[in-house]
Length: 239
Ligand code: BV8
Ligand code: ZN
Image: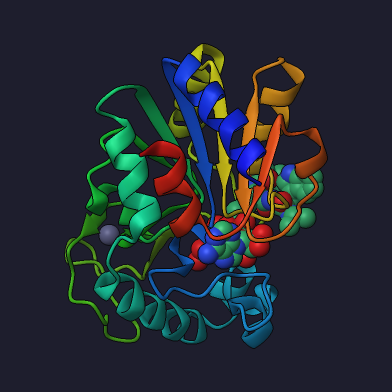
């Protein structure tokens, strides 16, 4: 492991511009549940019941109860040493974070260039007029209504089967095109198109450092795959 850490440190020292793709594992040590691990969110809820547009059409109250609970835990969570190490990296490197997380913890830790690929728990969007708002109370009434037009509000989150915001995707593609190192932290690398950015980096010959508690489909393609907790490894790697 020391050798691998040394190799990762070398790759990091060499790079001026870095992209970091993060997933639920980076927030696990902040006390937030991941999705696909044992005890994760998808063990307690079926994806089709809470994270698709069809689920929201069928039973918006069920979906809102799920997201009110996520808002409760997400709003009170604090960044952990992994988020803080990534934020500190910005002092010496150009860092763009591509996160699949909707918890806002990278920004809370001080990272300034964060692309939220799957939206944000803090924002809601009107299903009638499209108006977006944030900083509502933590728990929204069921069912929450738009202040402008009384339309039904939904979480401003990208559900399965929905398109990612094209502006966010193109900003991520630009960051990927100019980076000299791609890091992947705490994601099972199974959800696309988010995971595709990491595979695209491999195809372009950009070195990839992966940090994860367990191997993923990306591990054998990465230049260095570090197995362990993000909150322990990232401070060692990034200083
Ligand atoms: C779309 C929001 C176009 C909810 C989420 C190509 C191939 C195959 C399938 C597809 C494909 N392209 C599209 C698809 C379909 C689908 C998809 O990817 N399906 C997969 C699962 C088969 N994708 C889509 O639908 C996307 N849209 O493609 O649009 C389109 C549109 C219409 C018609 C056709 C095409 C939209 C995807 C958005 C999904 N939204 N959720 C919410 O958050 O409330 S996904 C959900 O998964 C979360 O957002 C989460 O961020 C994301 C990824 O999960 P991870 O973050 O990786 O979490 P996971 O639990 O899996 O893993 C945690 C990891 O951390 C583990 O590896 C664990 O070992 C590690 N870990 C744990 N603790 C630690 C740790 N590591 C380090 N330290 C620790 N302490
Ligand atoms: Zn409205």
